[in-house]
Length: 500
Image 1 (cartoon, rainbow, N blue to C red):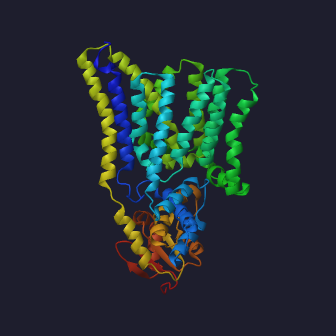
Image 2: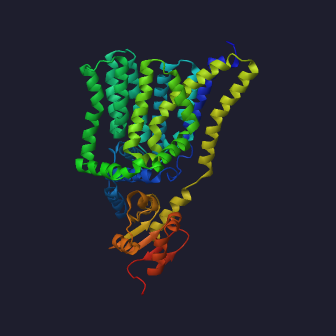
Image 3: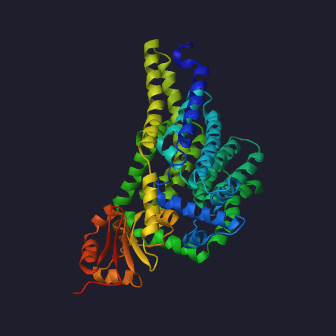
């Protein structure tokens, strides 16, 4: 029915605009909420670095406390070039004070730029406005996407640059001018500099798209330039950040030393659980199915297979992170969004042949699919308030002793305590850390004495983890005096063990 309810382009356009506005509003909602809701370990690492840059660049004198805060950055490992941290610090200078919420404004703007890239890619595959509505609905309203783009992480910006680089590569693969290789090289290089893991995708996707354009092995110089530019540009940044020995140690620690897990079902189960919970497994399956059904041209199939191959290689190298860190799966979001766009368009083509009541039911279902994730996300954001938790860390900073070294079983590697309370601690391993690396030997007493040698206090703020570690709990209560027992933390004095 050509004039049916489901064939009004203006209606789809208005719905798409509404989706973009609502998604942006969710990202800007409650800007000043402390960043304790989504992987605080990673976020506070960046916040501590941004504060240090700000205090270093800010004119005038600094207090003793600020000098300690600036020095705290020396304890932070830098995994990527601190581009976002420096951008946030420069914004602090413009504002004249430290305002951690500014990263949420930047990430909202970056994600809108990515939405434009997704829209252009969708239009190349299917110009019907329903496809754009579905793709941007997933991109803007998926609860995981909202949470990760409110966080102080480099992954959203890497994904945005990746989308634009893939768009340029795809335009070239469709027989476009070699001009498209220039933006492909520039945008791919920017993605790799932001986070070098983009190279997994920037290797697999261009190779398969090149095969789709022509099966010859020889390629012109411009293609090689675009292909190798991300590596050539990103490597100096990372080599300046880390020595080759550090990079080798990182791969050894997180890949080769964990190779025993490659044949275990546990990390793969965690991987699937992350995809299901974060990206909504049902939508992922629908999107991928639509992509394979609609991949009727060679370059379409090459894009899909190349993207999935890059994702699979990424997961194989960083298997444990894929099983434990949801934001590692963010680069899969654009591909699923593209597939959902194609899937909705085909579904509506079938529905348009039905009567108006069927079309009305279809519109109701579509509206529900858009309203539900937005409502869930708003409920999650509105129902939590971490200001009290941040205040707890501030109070601990005022009351914890400063006359000795502290070993701590605490949340997020102790970074929130360092950020809010200016207290530096060394982290006691969690059960999960022991499961991965086997950090405890058979004698708990020997392990405890070796790890706490030279420390004066043992602090516990993560009570859930504390109750998982029965040997630690028993050993502390039996051998050391408890000098603070309150609602916020427990503190033992390691300098004066109890008499046998």
